[in-house]
Length: 205
Ligand code: AMP
Image 1 (cartoon, rainbow, N blue to C red):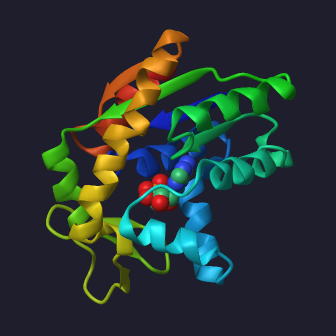
Image 2: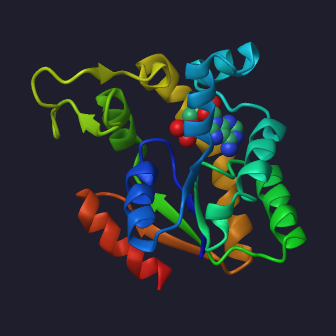
């Protein structure tokens, strides 16, 4: 199973991807996680780090290079789930070529649809547990007392608007691109995570 999850920042892609990873036993590949891991390891190009923290998109080729290496790993043989890649039409075209060279193709592209006002509200209150990676919302899903929390630099209000703009101007163009290929399924991303999961599973059937 080769699936792409598309949705604006805060739409729940990561949460749904983690669930699908467990359910289908296929890896979740998140270029955002990969860039953050490189940042934490101190190996991320300084220019990309600044772009990321301000909420912009790093150059297409940097993301494509990461994916090209990752999809050849053994654990990707039964399939994989892309979360946060592709984010532009050139990335989608590059993905198509990478897969074609390997005799593979996408099965489905699932779009998580959430209104911008709700996204802003979700992102600004989002915190991640440093140890477990668990995601909390300070108001609706508050962390337990004493949890050691991380506030992503790009979840600060000044970067959130820029990330949502980047989605609307660059990534939303993927929707007609994949719709034209008959791969796109749209899912309402508003509701509790497990309610959204039911809709995502239906979209994958
Ligand atoms: P995410 O965790 O998916 O929201 O990604 C965090 C940040 O990493 C984004 O705001 C971008 O700066 C960068 N990033 C992640 N994936 C990509 C991609 N496919 N293309 C360009 N930039 C990306």
